[in-house]
Length: 65
Image (cartoon, helix red, strand yellow):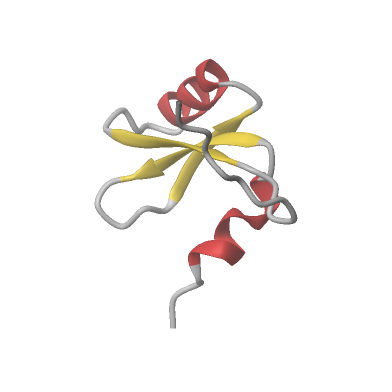
């Protein structure tokens, strides 16, 4: 059984993560996008998806004008 996405990302709150394609496993992380990219590259991954992990205890509602 695979780990649910929430459980995988829980330890990366308020950070950027680099997800490996196509299985979306975390291969790098950092407090900003450049740190996440550097960590993923250091781990041997260049073809990744970046995602900002927001706190799980806060609701976000986009404001449209």
